[in-house]
Length: 462
Image 1: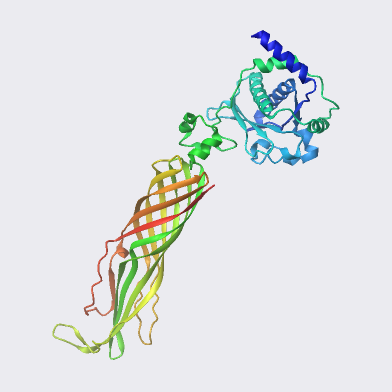
Image 2: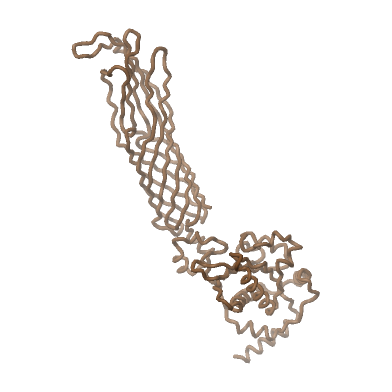
């Protein structure tokens, strides 16, 4: 076996004299905390030295800053566009970005990402625990990953190498011990990308509630996020539209009594009426974990109000039964059909039965608070009709739906809900003013005190 390694190393050495160094951009490693700056600098120095041994020409942030501007290369690991937006302006095809921080157990870890020109996302990632004194292990893994990527890309263009040497302040490529390097390449074990539970620059909040599923998948974090499409850690905005059925409309009767042209009493009755009409709503929420989100929905329910008004002229003399005779019994009430908007507010909690994947069935529950305003009645001369006041109708909400996610940040859904209404405004109410009201009126029909809705819409997640 060593004989074959020697032959391969000799062949590489014979052909490698014409090969130039591969330029690689390595911006300053970014520490999570100021107290980790020394460790971060030490790791960067170890990686730079190991890459130099592997015939890699390291372009640091200080070298490229005059060409790009210092602000563009600072804290590159914390800004997603970096370094993809820098590589087209640099004489290199590869960038190594690293962030040094602590995991949830307090262990120091290094997040390392390899970028390639014309590819916006990292082509490789590593999640490497860092034990005290293990800089050599860390730098070795990084160098192995860089060598593997260089082997895939093939030799660099001589013009690019010349420009990189000029940036680095070097006149010509130094001689490289090709035989020793060839043996090292052939003998080094292959190290594939590590699972990075934070993903390519993704915050760990996107894995709350599903990190176990991610670890079992064996996928790259970015691939897993696009396949599982978890909602955790995201703000959600929904635009909704649909149809409401049930206690949508309102109906009321308003009466006044007159004796010899003077108003003596007034009365009204008012309550819900069954109907169906369109509705629209906006929802804002947040998903603290993969299987749940919570938020507030604000909507408008279109409906109608049917109102009848009538002035009864009665005799001043009471009958034997204590009632007064109506002098205009054949006069029909005036009837008005009014458009109305009911505002409803719903604090909601949604639980996803299947929290991962493109199709996510869910159940939802919460409160329903419906508001409507006072009746606006045109008052005739010498009469004052009572205006039934508006108010709040509380209720309980329950339902379910299906969310279809074509991507991690957008979803389409269809939903059905049931609302049970409570309180005095959810049923027929009446009141009188002045003298006791003794006239018989129609009886408004009772309703079921519910509203069922069918809605659909689109959800955007940030």
